[in-house]
Image (cartoon, rainbow, N blue to C red; front, side, top):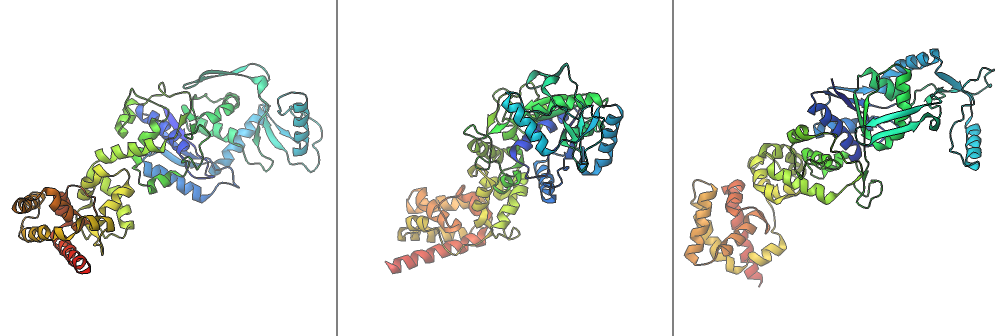
Length: 470
């Protein structure tokens, strides 16, 4: 069975690059009927935090990237790592290294001065003397000294690294805690991971890890190293480009499936298709069409993708994600229409859920004043007669639906022999407080008759005051 994994370190937030890696791994497993594992690589005890763990779990949950196994914490597996290190000692493939930091610095300085690549020179590889006093040793792996490591990468193609380029890597620190390169190999072996999809910043670790897999007798997984996500200016993605916690995109009003859609296209393509549902991503995703060069993060494109998903999502799905945004603006959702009906009406005019929520307020919450510019333009004395006549007609509407409301507006315009704009715009400002809204008859239906009648009367009072003050 295909098994993939996402293995973040909880030393910071879950960012865009990490989410794309998780997505590609998740999609590959789902496409091929496999399993997806979440592993928390928390062996960096100084920098790992519970807050970061929670942010990772919350981000994965919001995105809907459900895992079949996990979360598995590396800190719960220290005994297993010690067991494997002992096995390497037993095979003569691990040794204690007593080189001090000062000794290593001096060694590297000499290598640089000689024009050589700075690397550990193996000085304790075959050491059998008396250990230096007072030095807590690290444990190193005896890397093969000849031959090549061949990586048949599913994105990069064939990569060949000579073992002479690799030094003896540290597999346990001087305090006894295992290092990344060891733990990741043991974990992937124990968890039956068949395919490792990760950023190409890990490519330099891969030959070392392949040698470790072979040393412990594990089957070597297949690798796919995907290019980095860059900022729009081509530099490494940072906070100024949008490399923020994935949960900040949630706060900015992006739908989770829109963010995933954007990220799947950030380095992968299926013909010219831009907008994908989750099911379509699973159906079409493959590693063959992953680009081998970096992609640039584009906030404008992400916003456009979000807009398309808002237009196509079910009204109930929109309402579920919209609800906290509307509530945050002080709206009591029990005091108004069904939120899914409001979302359905507003979907064509919103790029984000934040925009949609701002447009939804007047459906649930009464306002005390009209937007100044809209009122100045449309709530003028000339609007008093049409609003008064329309008010009378609307008060007599028993079935408060858009069609009778539309008829009342039409009849008012016909009686007064004026264009629809002379009726519709004053009505829009009166019942919404501003000059922007969806179709006014549908808007009025959802606002409800009592609120509409009260707000038209408020607008007429505003016009009276305006006349008196002029």
